[in-house]
Amino acid sequence: MRRLALALGVPAALAIGQQQLLVQLPPQLQHLSMAPSSSGPAALQLRFSRPMERASLERGSKLVPPLRARWLGDGSALMLSLDPGQRLNQPLQLSLNGRDQRHGALTASTWLWDPRPRLLAVVPVAGGEQLQLRQHNGRWQPISPIWPQIAAVEPLGDGSGVVVAIQDQRRQQVWRIGLRQRNLSRLPQTLAEVQASAPQPLGPDGALSAHLSSNRRGDLLLQLGGIEPTSNRTLWWPQGKGMQSLNLEASGPMRLLPQGGAVVVPGSDGLGLHDLPPRPPRRQVLPGSRDLSSFCPEAGRALLTRHWPDYRRSLELVEPGQPPRQLWIGDQALVASSCSGNGERIWLALVDGVQRPVLTLLALDRQGRVLRRARLTTWELEPGTGLSHDPSTQTLLAALRPMAGPGALATSAQAPAQPVLIDATSLKLHPLAKTVTQALWLTP
Image (cartoon, rainbow, N blue to C red; front, side):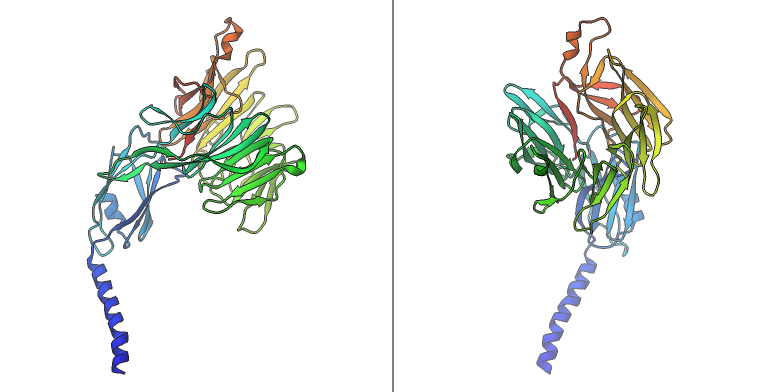
């Protein structure tokens, strides 16, 4: 009995001693990572070794430049979220300081944080096309080999890579390029440029067409079209898992829901929302002649283009539990859209006219009121490209072709496209001197 008591007592005493030692130690930051932000420009997720006093973190921590931010959450898992409407023009320096709920002082640390996305573009070069990244200092960095033609590009939503569909003869092959980013670093370490790995093939060879979609988790959906309808395939790569085949039929390109868990599938009876494994199969349908135009950052919000029998088009905002709400209707072609937060700001690109189409940008509020209008008589949107918003810099990105003014030679309208940064408030254009065929944001 004495030996048994000793055998049981020693581990218990050690555990109690270890617990007392941990109580005496100051609280530690165990994990810090960038988090998707649905409302503000950016957010950080933090996990501490002990429950923290949030008010002390608010008082003791500091951002340089001094931006407005909120501490969210409770206990040992918290989030630091930058308030909406602020512009970031440089990396941030975050000094963490505060106390836990036992009033123990946190071990102070200082971090560099750059939540701005990089510009990703398909660039024509000698021998074909190449994928290139624009660093924040303006330098362009090739991240792919030179391919004959890049038909489609999809950055993975978690920033871990980019997927491209390569057109060779009449066939397409899909490749994945892994990317390593360091946009958050503890001083004295500094931030680093993106490192790209060698391309790896995805899916079967020889598809006639390939549509790509990703979400914030980094999942990938690959929709392959063959010669016969029976040869069409839909492949899905959940992040960190192997390929799965999905039995889905669609009348057009499918899109993964940004927050994950479902896919939007266009069909003859309307837009369908299909749950993905491991959820049980479930399908919801929004009837009518509608196309998905773009997603909003907040979950469940999206912009839809509706086609009317009299050839008009309208833009609708969809929110959870609500019928689609019309924001705009007109005779113009609605070629692209984007929105911020839950749809408090919406931007759309319209094309009007036949002989000489004119591109117009509109900025709307969530009630559909026009806040700003810009008529771009000397620009046209590169066919097949869109309009995307970066909340960290309050900037829109588009691939635009410069056009000659009225009365100029028609051949001058064949100028190549270039990436154009557009101020989201004033709609003022800032073209970049670079020839591209596509331009997108790469999530940091």
